[in-house]
Image (cartoon, rainbow, N blue to C red):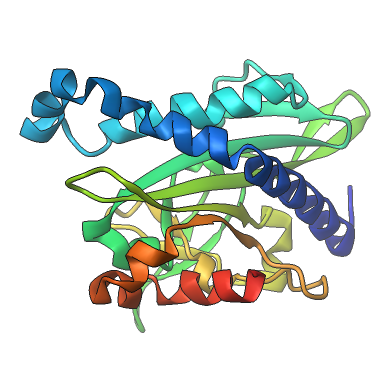
Length: 250
């Protein structure tokens, strides 16, 4: 098993790798996310009439996951408990999930995202209010055991913000959620209580930085449509945290 410093180093290493890969393929990704427009007349009336905003995930996942799969990163793993992308590399097992959010929910998107129990390893407390604390137990381990070897479980999320009418992409981020072993470093800052008792959100606004590494962030801005966002006061206010990260990153 790794000490906390080495664990953060490996989390940061793959965050940087995935970030630079997504930046390298940014044009292809944005072009792929726009392919829906070619046949919009054939599907939009059904999507807009109640099919649900979550359906946008399906199309976006095809594009983003195809890019990762095309790169051939590691050995895909068939374990039924895990993220949509789950693969093994020499020194880790890696989970990657995609989250899409409409601009009408920009407030939550700017500070936290919903994560499933099968998508993280951070077992800890969720502070609901001054008098209520909920225990949270994810389904992923801190380490996977391969014979005599233990490899850390790493968790990443690609988040996409899109307009709820035109479906234009406004922002794409890459987030690294701390491994549960790091609870002594991050305490209750990682988790935020969800709407249901069993649900949690990754409260990345409180964990922007790797706490054992210098000048390393857990949030990387892959794409920001700054021109459109800054012209809309609601979006500019709603994305204030991510805009600050973006400016610092530039």
